[in-house]
Amino acid sequence: MRILVTGGAGFVGANLALRLRRDHEWSVTALDNLKRRGSELALRRLAQGGVCFVHGDVRSPDDLNAVGAVDLIIECSAEPSVHAGSDGDARYVVETNLMGTFNCLDLAWRHGAGMIFLSTSRVYSIAALQALPVMPAATRLIPEAGASGCGWSPQGVAESFPTTGNRSLYGATKLASELLVEEYHAMHRIPTVIDRCGVISGPWQMGKVDQGFFVLWAARHLYGGPLGYSGFGGEGLQVRDVLHVDDLYRLVEHQATRIESLGGHTFNVGGGAGSSVSLKELTALCAERTGRNIAVGSNPLTRSEDIPYYVSDNRLVRQVTNWSPRYTAEGILDDVIAWLDEYRKELIPILSQ
Image (cartoon, rainbow, N blue to C red; front, side, top):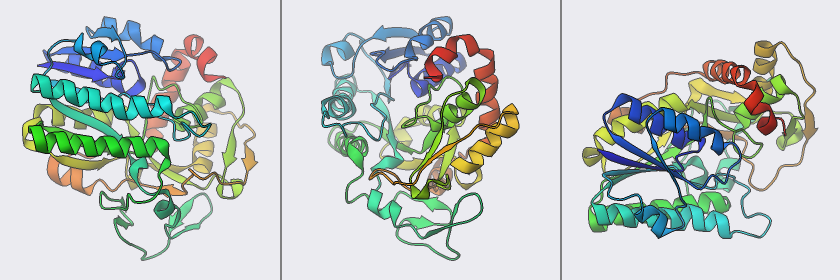
């Protein structure tokens, strides 16, 4: 099988490409424009792992056409920041996340290929997420006892949760891309799967405040640098679930080998309640693992894109594929810290800024 991984030098793309090449006798090509700082570090890993790298951009149909015929596209390319375009310049996020997906779908149609599209939990309505009935406990926000609603329960947020209303430009471009994926599946019978991923983390993620907070928190504890709780009173009680990239790989591999039978499905994919953590809890875990306590600042003001609580309800994907995550937040953190320590010299210039 000939596989194209777009965003293939990024954190998720490179990890998926390397594992697919390692575990199967497949031809794997990674395409990336190397815009994000740190993606250049993936090039040596890709070469050593037998993955062909193409320096190209999903915004350019010619770059995609140069790859040649493919059997499966794993669409990992994205401008991943939820704050992208908030400065008024939205061209890059729209052209990359929406037009890039269209160009990939066009390539899939012309070659009769399938597509696994990595979407995001950010397709869901910010207003609806901000209205979830949660209350403060000692170290995190928790759901009110017995509370549930449309697409939401103590298990987390399901695929039927509202997507109406604003969701950030990032979320809007990913939701619009999902609609294109659905249309190509219906119109051209392209086998497609959509994975709405929550927070993904693990080694080789170049963590930033707006995307990759889990790695950022660990890196600041090891390398130094400022950290701050932002929004919801500045107490660090907001909660996310975290998914190890190796757990995501197990699902994507399953989908890649069964793309015809899974075609048309949309799944929520995340760490789930068993791998959820608040910023305050993450600070304590980092201090415990590194032996370093650092001062964490506080900004009580909540930005319009901020959400207090998100945990993925994985029941549908588990029912259909028998997949569930294996890593806890603690296990992910242990992997991240070991990686940060081993590659300290290469990573400090990137992650300490």
